[in-house]
Length: 267
Image (cartoon, rainbow, N blue to C red; front, side):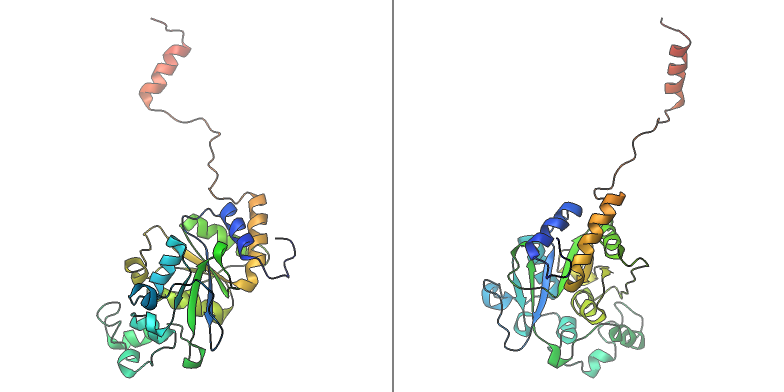
């Protein structure tokens, strides 16, 4: 990547990630376009172009599996939690009292209210059109890098992110609303995190049982790429190297045959 102070090129980032992570689906760039900021050309709008209203996780799934650039505003969304989290609908008492979580994720409305408090949220004035696109086809500067992979691939991303700083990477999850963790929490906290896909992401976004995700602010991507290169040189690699230089142990009957050969038995 060269100079770590310059804005990273999306295509170059995609190439480095492919070399070190080899994920099954495309790494994505995410940006929230606000106010009069023009959207990129050739983006798909779920309602306008497909006649459907979706969840944010579905749009992410389309981008990482189909290779589409997808733009999602309030007219494109059907998921109530996302509409509240992304500032498109008000958090009225029925929501804040915990009714959506009660009986499904938690025992009581009181517990549900605590769960809803943990969902990161944009204020109405922060709301905007969420655009996700494969890095190799990004025509805008992302705010967030999103990678889906298996646990080993996400582990590689974590070690790359910690290369320069050391320490530990911590994440929080409620098992739901991972779209808010991906977009809002990453922007708010300004640090990388690993994401446990929520139930909705698995049902509507088609995220598979072996998958998890990793996010990092775009401004920190140069350090991530340097970290992937550095840890690769140190031997932390994907695919994980297999240790094969050892003498295997065989069943007793195999060992008995070898003993007889060693003693000279030939007939």
